[in-house]
Length: 201
Image (cartoon, rainbow, N blue to C red):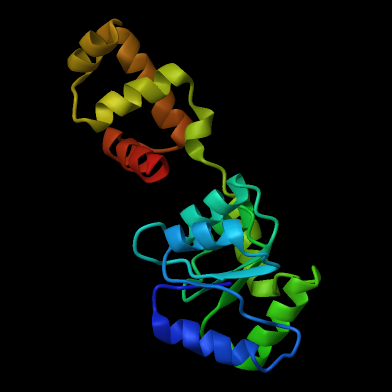
């Protein structure tokens, strides 16, 4: 099955797959919702899935397919080479991650390898995945109470307001904020707030 919200891309991928007698397109979908419906009734071995689609994204579609027990090989075919996207999709159960600007011969080869369960992520994709997965969320260093204090600080609350909101003393708030700055290795409340918002997004 080919899943993409651009008819031109579906047509191009179909033409590419027709080159191989071993690949047959049995379903097409223009959205994640259509893909889920088709996957329930079609006997699929491989799903080629776009990432950036209107409605359900490729990631949401992938998660839903896997949640419903879909065992087909799922190949992400996208323009995005973002390490974050790569990590999210592979970690969510994608079998391969291919870029739309790759050479057609390479794409066909990788699709065939994936269909046989032999696909390996290329070195660039693998390096991006490893780098993204090895990034430690700095907020993991904080206690629940410290995260609670930082959450209030991020709202623009003063120490007194944070103390009132969390029913603790203002002095305790100051201690928590000092600990937060030390653990996050930043020197100001603003820097801590920026880091909090980045990693909570």
